[in-house]
Length: 327
Image (cartoon, rainbow, N blue to C red; front, side, top):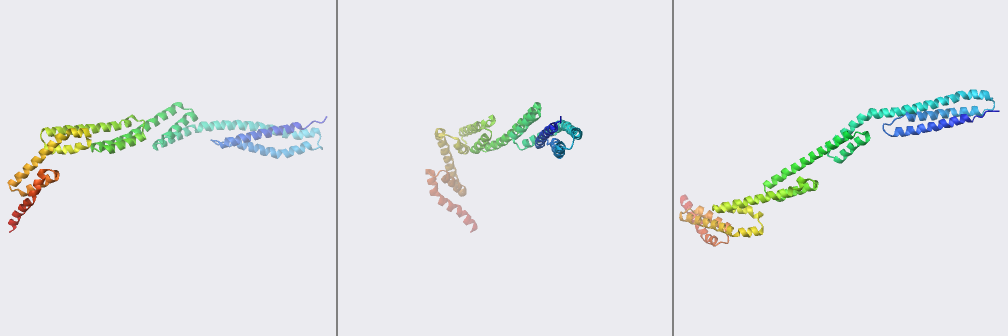
């Protein structure tokens, strides 16, 4: 009974399927890091060899002139070669897998170091979200939980240092504004910080601190005013009152009104006495200067009207000695 040649075609089919599988795996391995090319080359070579030997095997199997014995003798080397190719492909597949694992181990430290450098770059740019994402990669990609926690702690510390530096710089500006009594400018700086760091306790307390400084300065001015009034320092009292005026509420201003009127009355009396003394001593220049001050500072007073009536005569008398000296 004639033997059938079906097993040869079965071997070809199995080998072809295996070669296609190796080729598919090779394409996938080549497409993803670290880009191994061994499997792709093995699959390609296998398909080329199968394609080259297939016509020969088909001719030998289908040749009717060959008897069964000679056909088997001719096909046996081809079958053996296919078996060897199958073994070789299995070996190459195993070696490729080992090679890929070896590459992962070999490049593990380099990849981790590259991640550390990238984290430092993101910290320098103050891109905190990107830095935390890279720290998560250290944990999820390489499995280094402790290292990832250390990196995250470092990022948090750097971020806190950056925030603290920004806050301190603006606080220094606020201090300059409060020392120069520019309270609105100080509040604007505080509001800008609150928009940047709404959850920071130090920043949230800045408006209260600014108002506390303002109230403390107002209290100091009130105390100085009271002390100046008590010692009858008229000029000092008026200077302090001018500084105090922007801080007073309407109720506070009304409560101080009587004392302020007394201070200004005393100031006018002093100027009037000086004016009269200068006229008596024929010190016309000093009298004119004092009279101008009375008119300027107390324009609606009776004393100002009386001074105005005398100013022309005083100026004429101030000119006479100079004219006599030049004659």
